[in-house]
Length: 481
Ligand code: NDP
Image (cartoon, rainbow, N blue to C red; front, side, top):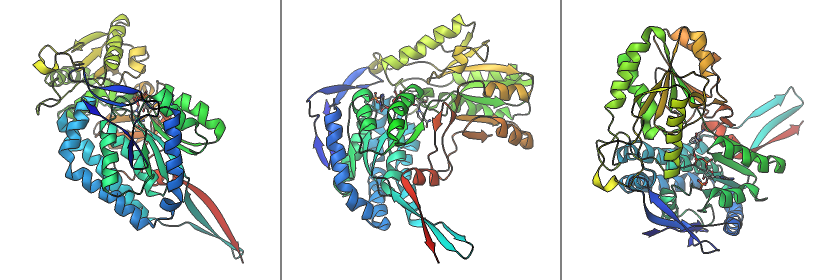
C-alpha cells in the first residue's frame, strides 16, 4: 500500500493531525494507497511556505521560471508510462487514453505557459500629448488551485502552470479521490529544482482542505474546477473577502446533428464525445439533438457503435470505457438510469454493468455505455449533469428548436454542431449559450483560446491570455508630460 505525503516547502509531510484516508482503485474496488487527512493547520503551514517563497519567485526572471517549468515537463515526458499507469489505476480511465492524451497534455500545459511568459507584450496608451499610460501586470501572491477527479493531472497542471509562470506561488489541492499523479508531480518538482515553497500540495477532503484554502486570508486568488454546487459554496466564502475567483463548473452539453450531417464522419466522433473517459469529462455531449429527417438512421448507427465499445479493465489495450471513479459516483449514475425509466425513457443500449469483465475487476465499478430515447428534453435526466456514460437522444423539427433545447439547461459550457451548411452553423453557434462551440469536431483545444462556461457552468475564463490575466493584477501607471 503506497503512503503518500503532502508536499510543503519541498518536504514530504504527513497531516499534522496524523489521520489518513484510503485511496481506491476503481477497476478493482480495493484500497491501494493512503493520503494525509489534512486540515486547516496543514493548509496554514503550506500558505506560510508559499508566502515565504513569493518574494524570491516573483522576482525570478521570466526565462528562469520558464526553464524550471520546462524541466518539470521534460521529467513528465520521460515518465509518461509511469504517470499514465498511475492515472489509470487511480481514476479508472483506460491507460491508453492517459498515455496518448492526458499525460502529454499535462506536460504541454507547462510548456505552453513557460513559453507564454517569454512572449509577453506590454500595453501602452497615449493620452493625446498629455500623458502616456502603461499597464504593469504583477503576480497576485499565493494562489489557491483546487482541481477535480476526472482529468486529474491534466486539470491540476492547467491551473498550476499559469499561476507559477506569472510569478505566483501556489497551494494546491487535488481531489482526494484521485491524488496519485499530483503526489508524483510534487516529487518531480523537487527533482527539477523548483525553489522551496513555490508549489505546495495539500491532500485531504474538500470540506477540510479545500474550504481552508478558500477561507485563508492570505490566499487572494482561487482557481477552482469542479461541480456547480461546490462552486457556489466557494463563491459564498470568497466573494465577501473580495478574492479573485475563477470557477470552471458543471455542464450538460448538447450535440446537435443537422439534417445535412455527414453521419459517416460524425458518428465516431459523437460516440467519442459521449463516452470518452466514461463520460466523465465536463465537455462530453450527453444530450444529442437530432433533426427528425435523420433521427431513425442516426439512432440505429449510434447505438450500434456504442454497443461495439469494450467496457472493462482499464489496463487492457483494447478497452474503450474503463471504470467509474468511485462507488458513490456509480450509484449516482445508476440512480439517473432508474429516474430515466420513471420519466418515460426507453434504454436502447446498456443500462447497467457489463456482463463480461476480467477476473481481477470483479469487485470494480463499471457501467456500460447507455443510450436513452423517448424522454422530454426538459426532464431531469435530460437537463441535470450525470457525468457518466449515459446519453439521451431527442428529435427536433428545425434548427430553432435545436437551439432552444441546447439552451434549456442551467448550464452553458459546450456544444457541438454537425452538418454541412457551415453558414447556418455559424448562425446557430452565435445563438447558443455556451462558452465553447465546436462545428464538426469535438474536444479540439488550442491552449491560446478562452475556455470556460456561461450561466451556471462558471465564472471567468481559463486558457491563453485569460489565465495570464487572472493570475496577475493589472496596474495603470500614468506618466504626465
Ligand atoms: P467537486 O466539486 O466535488 O470537487 C472538486 C474539487 O473541490 C475537489 O478537489 C474537492 O475535494 C474540492 N472540494 C469539495 N468541496 C469543497 C469545498 N467546500 N471547498 C473547497 N473545495 C472543495 O467536483 P468533482 O471532483 O466531483 O468533479 C466533477 C465536477 O467537476 C463535475 O461537475 C464536472 O462537470 C466538473 N468539471 C468542470 C470542468 C470545467 O472545466 N468546467 C472540467 C472538469 C470537471 P474532494 O474531491 O477531495 O472532496
